[in-house]
Image (cartoon, rainbow, N blue to C red; front, side, top):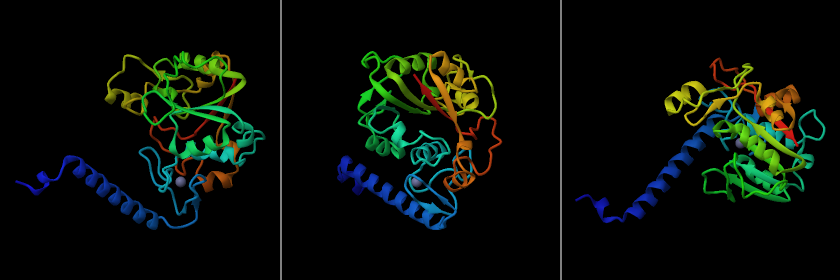
Length: 271
Ligand SMILES: [Zn+2]
């Protein structure tokens, strides 16, 4: 009989988890040492190094310390007032507002929560949120309840994205703002979607990820306008070259993968 059999399963699991996180901690420490330098900086955790790490699509875009990606750092650069646009900063966008944050990213959650007057997190199936909501049908949320809704990379997962946009419009107060991102190919004019594609393999092949139902095109703006929003689109061109390179607000090397999102766009959809 193996000696392990005498140790209760719960303790074995706990030991296993501890060993796993110890190994991950050692691996991260080694990686951070290897990437010592000051060429790039994460504007979220303030790590500085020679380069960011790679994701499956792009080289040098992920913070090795906090895991931030281009879209997280671009929003924080806006909040920090680093763009050339007036009124797109934390004070104007978030301070004193009642904010609903879909699929709250750990890199952004604390920052948004601290700025908000009232902060509500939500997700379709995660447990670590205040409310469980399906964005396309939110009967438990009153009309005109929120000043701001933030939904980064959510709409590509929602079966009826047009219904979701209409719901976002309904729950926002007059002049309220939905801040939205979605994965997008570089230059397709039309959203590519096909409800008959349902297997994880086919979805990955067509839309870039096993749980993506579409890959948006330039018509994402028009779809938001159909839901009666007035839409401003902000991308890396709103920032100085120095900020783009320092905080890596676009991939240092453009991916040639046909489904890669090289140029991140933020949609500011105003009611
Ligand atoms: Zn970071």
